[in-house]
Image 1 (cartoon, one colour):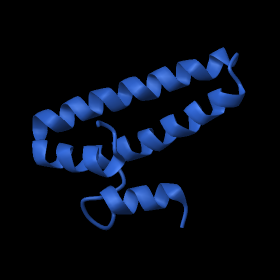
Image 2 (cartoon, one colour):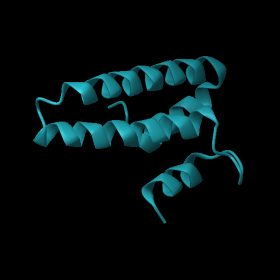
Image 3 (spheres, helix red, strand yellow):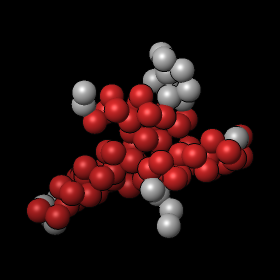
Length: 85
């Protein structure tokens, strides 16, 4: 099973859930980790930095929405993905 499928399975609300806020936050977090790792070896890659900023801001908006809508689910996602310390 791929990392993407594992994230979807662990955060989904039901079997066919692929688009809920929780799943989107998980997938964006994985994308952010991947791009950040890319920057360790390619420091001068300015085009990818735009993609990273876009993904970080999108995740930030989704987290804000989820916190406003369902705080219990928000806390679950934060702890599962280890986003806040």
